[in-house]
Length: 95
Image 1 (cartoon, rainbow, N blue to C red):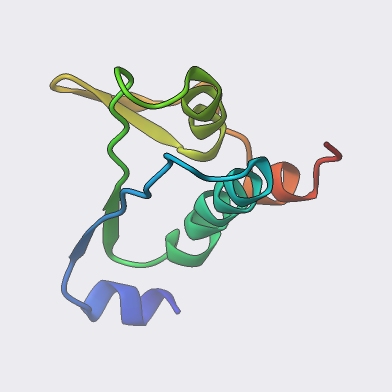
Image 2 (tube, rainbow, N blue to C red):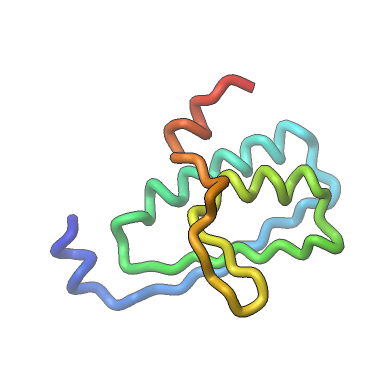
């Protein structure tokens, strides 16, 4: 509810999954979860930061993450992500 969001204090969340040792299926499900977080928290007074260390995370995981995050912070620059896909489109897309 928009009234609730306007009267609530702002929350900040950092979500950093452990990618090492995950199966393809576990990674696929986590990517869907990250996409659905946008749907769940979109109208709420919350900022969610998902750090990805591109030096240690598989490039495929990073490129998929770019599809599930509406904004990207690189260095000090926060910008809209042109690769972002709506959660309904991302989660329901055939593999």
